[in-house]
Image (cartoon, rainbow, N blue to C red):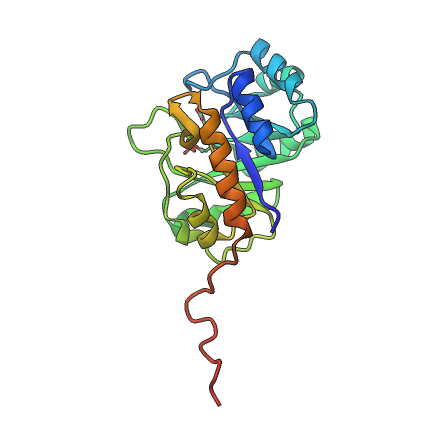
Length: 231
Ligand SMILES: O=C(O)c1ccccc1NCC(=O)[C@H](O)[C@H](O)COP(=O)(O)O
């Protein structure tokens, strides 16, 4: 399996370099003023230019209007847009068509019932990102460092690639991959030393652990092979 690894919420040239050196496939930049990872447009311009084709740039927004998206796209020149708010399938389709860019649509998950609306987004988004629903008192709609029950994704087939995020780190990413079989993982808090402060060593460990996890054969689902040996 070819795994897509995304490091989200990068804010400095040093930690962006760390993500690129570690071999991240996607580097995410957050545009949400309440977030400790929020970027000014001028910072986005500088960081975006530093990527120079070594990874795909992802602009993360939350219910952004066209004017804000216009300015972000102009500054960062992203390869992807990540919509992390309450955007409807119609809005996802409209954004995709306006910018001609592929869309990652984030969907909050706390249980299997949350997957019911995923099919409607699979029709219009290029990737689905299953992220933990924010805790009740959270200030942010994502990037809270909390996991969800990965089992709800096992066996999921929406005909679209998906990614898993929420509370991942170097210690648990292989388990998340074993349970979900996800072709992509996304991390923010788990590679930080404090909210918004990325740690180069943790970034490197995460990418290594994710690649090692993806290379491991997945355990057979319960019940598989039950007929073997019957005669
Ligand atoms: O990171 C933020 O500050 C943020 C703000 C608003 C919406 C989404 C945000 N982050 C999303 C992500 O970084 C990831 O897609 C994902 O939620 C992983 O977060 P984490 O649990 O911190 O690894």
